[in-house]
Image (cartoon, rainbow, N blue to C red):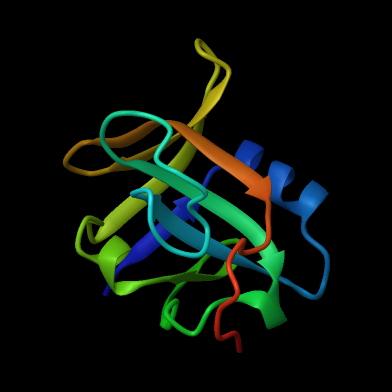
Length: 123
């Protein structure tokens, strides 16, 4: 079973942005999909979005539980995730990082409020 844990600093940031109608969406920005405006860098980038529950695309049907609540993600993102992951705040760089037991998945992990940009099927 896949697991994601947020440290206290990440939880505080999420709680500042999230309201009761919002959910968390973990997305791999590959330049396509409802949360990817365009691929803005070489390679792939993970992002965590706080979005109204009613706007989560139906393609984000996978759910994992975390200490911040449900986290929705799609099949493409699932293929690149590890079983045990953490979001931590790195004081040296003042950024959040997505880590697994095996590797650093995202050195500059963005946590932000966002809605899907395309006309899509939603929940």
